[in-house]
Image (cartoon, rainbow over all chains, first blue to last red; front, side):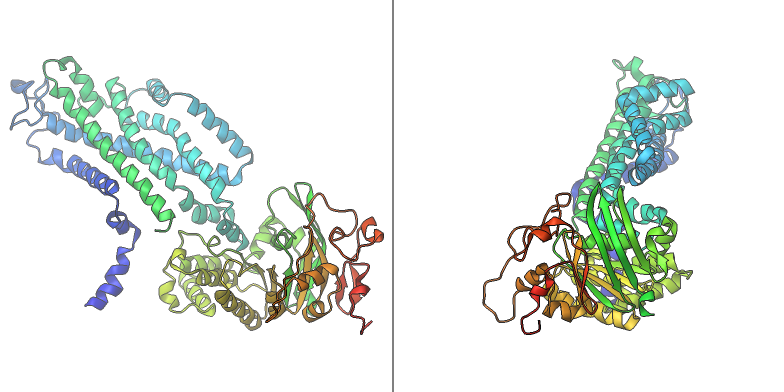
Length: 291
Length: 324
């Protein structure tokens, strides 16, 4: 039995995914736990709630938090807890797509520019400078205002602006990684450029971009909320934290829970994602150091 | 014709950023022969290797000729040269810590080499990789193939690097200071391995080292490099016992002898910097036998004995009196 444990079970614990959870480092583990919990709440919460996210109950408007409505109700009598949970789906989605699309675009461009250099590097470098020169929020809002409201246009705007950050990080890493001896060795073994970039460079240059992706995730949710606040994001009656805050601001003095709970949700999600990002950075540093 | 199958480097000159790092280097490595290139750091040994592989840093220029069998390497298109790398010419690098991709398991890393040069299935390549690991003396290869480079010791990693270089069965192996980063015991094991692999696979070996004793034990012929030039070249026993260039002689004299307690001799001065070479013989500033004629003009590679060349016009002076 102990033989089986030593042969079969223990080696598997070394697998990256599991080690990511089991290896020490509290901020990474707490962050991971919190983010997973929020995702589960977003998935399950609206299903088990006795109220519909958009169901109005004009007999019970602007109720204080109570056992029936832990977060209270809004001016249409909709349960705010249910709406916050339903909105989490939208905001997590904004964070997810707002990070993955630019991450992929930026990584590819950064890798190509760093590896080949030359004209490609010069052109993408100037493009990166141009985008970096504009304030992120202003540019995203301008693009969404131009394209019109809606989630799809929000993703387009975020992708158009934030790929530059990833491209810059990946390019810098590629420049140093391509001079390492194992890349020279890969050339010496007769590998082509595509294989060298995909198998030998990509996995070694992408880690700073992944860490940045965590803080970018928070930023994207804030952008989503701000856009929603301006009425350019998710359209009513669908719930989204920023839109909820915007809708509730008229009641800020008399019924503050309309604004406080969606706001808290943003803060809590941001907190856990940032913890995860911090922990991830630590983790990657340790793995790089070979500990 | 045994030379036609080996490597022939003819009047190779490599320039980087306007400076000639390697000048007028000619030598021949016969088929399944071991050739040693010796010299101190910066003498151009590594650049000669990289020129053979076509892996010089960007912005460098070459002239002369490098023939592998009948193929002229310097005239090949990048695509054909790339196909030759790994399959016809393998290379072992100096630092096994740096030469392996840290995020690739070693088994897949080796089978990648096989798959990129031969049309084989995944399973065949996997079997080939494990076979290659066994050939370089890694025990329990099936299990070890799943490990990452950091789970191996330095000597084992160098064995993996060698397994990768040999996976596609090249005709010529370039080993650039393969044991410099390893301790002496491990070093002996790696050298024995290289030697037996070369004999078993009937492949040519170009061994680069700064250590004369390594080359003395492994190579049939040796070339001595100094400041980018090949200053002497010939059969190893001949060159070591009867050096015909003052630099070779000084190099041998500065090597510790077994059981001797004499102070090590060193060569006065330091090698010239590239771009600031003397007009005449490159060794003239440090040579004990220097004359005005040595300083006047570059010295040709002169035939001094059977298969033995030296870049010195006063080489007769080095022949022991009894033989002269």
